[in-house]
Image 1 (cartoon, rainbow, N blue to C red):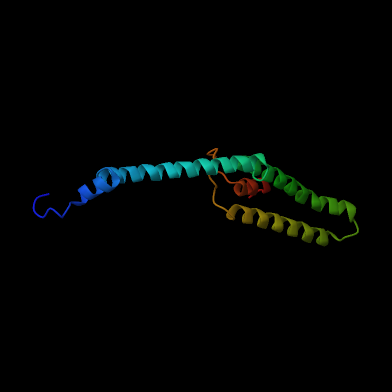
Image 2 (image 1 turned 90 degrees about the horizontal axis):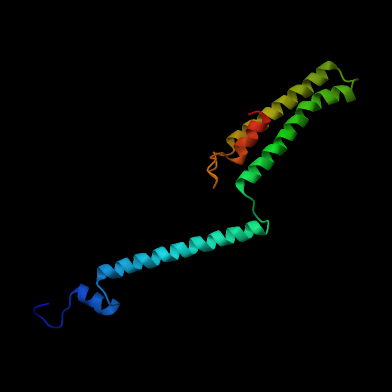
Length: 142
């Protein structure tokens, strides 16, 4: 730099202090940030794999299948409850049985509606785009 020999440009100062130009120092900083991000992602992945191995978490598709199977069983139970009550409690009036049936239908519908509206579709690693809650609602009949 011409003029005052005691004044230096920012680039010269950066080159002397960092051993490179300011632009190269920024590139090095970006590279360090990217390495830190990759290291964190790798550590997170390892932590998740260990949690899976210990049985602390389960894959979304497994949970979805289990919940759907359980709600299908629940729906079948609710469907059979009315006829079973007619068989077990024949002394009740038909109007009583009809009220029980109407209540069971209402509750089954309400459960299906709640499950369907409880969550938006959840993206999984498998890319199915379907959440366990939505599959469950379909199992009940929603």
